Image (cartoon, rainbow, N blue to C red; front, side):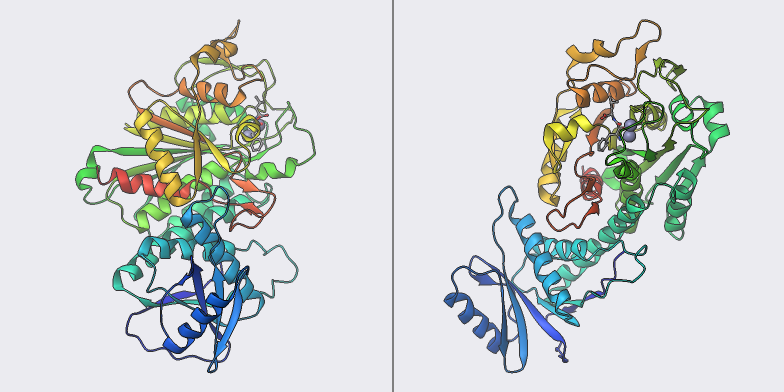
Length: 486
Ligand code: BES
Ligand code: ZN
Ligand code: ZN
């Protein structure tokens, strides 16, 4: 949830300051953002020129106060990311000081950089605190962008649409597993889609069985909560050049992953409430895309199931038939993500996708390979992979291209069924990707994003507090935007 209230004031709007108000100046390479009050700005400039090493300072002049925040370069973070971090740190400080309204002069910032400032501030003021017996005393100040051009104002409004969609995903991901089984996930998404142009449909267990979605049925059968497939369609009235594309987003939605009969160790198992991040992210991306009215056809498929051991759970050694007719021996019930995604990918193909992107907290192996900040990117199309990496750089989400090494394909050959659901332990993220590829038709561009690292963080990271980050949503929205233009 985000308590943040914000508005922007155009260039010439007069400011009426009250007690409790403060300016925020961001200082990049000795230059400060905006110039709203010449006397104050002059004083700020003076302070900056006098200080050497500093991490921000209050400046008070003729009854007005300002927090001056330096934008430091941080190892591994590009300029926009450094700006997001600096803005978030400044805003957090001002929140702790109980500033009532923050006036952020934005004259000196070009609209993309201004959006970055907004993103940093917004993300860092996100809270998931409704399980606390006492709500947090730190209510964020109202944020007022001043001296904005009209174009910057529209950019900020668009950014806010996207950011509130990201909050929606973060809320779902942070929710405890018992609170959010598949059908509750669905009803929250349905509610969020009310009043939008999105068309939501659900396949319940009976339909999944009838239509042969073997992955979802198999993974979900040990849980008292039924699995389901949620489809969200967005078809703009006029899609112009975007009409050539049908982007289908597929999300892993394991509402809790105990590992099933191949039970996970208890330490840190709680984090597996995040195993539906991919599904939450694709749903959130749909909300943003529809609010922004992007002229391109996009569909999201959320594959939802709870992975839990019980009398009715799938057993290691069991064999099921996947949607594309291939038979799969379940070697580990903990490699469940790829099973439910097989249904999502087949459905994406059936819907006539021209481009498929799946998001999944799929493997621990990718976290060991790339650490917590980077998503593993697997793709059958170099141009798509390059595009996603570029977009990631722009929106502050890091992707690293990984190989779909066919030499490893035989590691999940099986003697009884067509294949088994795990390969060798080494290269586990790659074999998971290869398994998914079995369900992607030739000729359809596809990218698999293994977000197991950055989807959920156990330490504060950049401008994110502990917990869900909504990683991937910004990339998906930008990808849809780019497809709409080519
Ligand atoms: N949901 C997990 C992957 C995961 C691990 C996500 C850590 C986030 C953090 C997935 O379903 C899983 O359990 N994968 C197994 C696969 C193995 C059995 C081949 C894994 O990574 O250990
Ligand atoms: Zn698992
Ligand atoms: Zn999982």
